[in-house]
Image 1 (cartoon, helix red, strand yellow):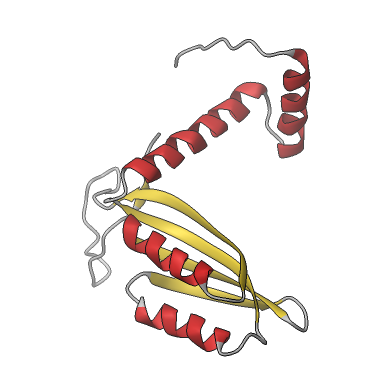
Image 2 (cartoon, one colour):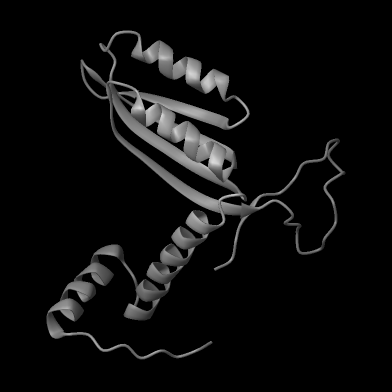
Length: 159
């Protein structure tokens, strides 16, 4: 483990200590490591766009918007190779929240998310991506064949 020293002005240090407390970190170091992992992952996702990812696309939309619910459902069916699961929540009389779990090549996942967020009536769309390594194996490196089928493992890349 490496030790890094950072100088902060007092106001920023006080605000950061507040963040540390609110988020339940035991100390500043844990919080800084988390922020660094997030920044490294964001860069990796931006620069390494040919790799695989898992993602969550969440958005709010007005279900009274003409044919919007049908267009959103059709988009998910047209991209069934990316869509793992979706959850639909009725927020009030007019608005719904959908959260769609995605898995696939990063550019394809981004394109699908952009398509959905561009639909008229969709608001507050947010895509959260995590790059994954499709070649991950368990520590013992033994393939999973004891339960009748094979499957690939996707694990978050280490940062």
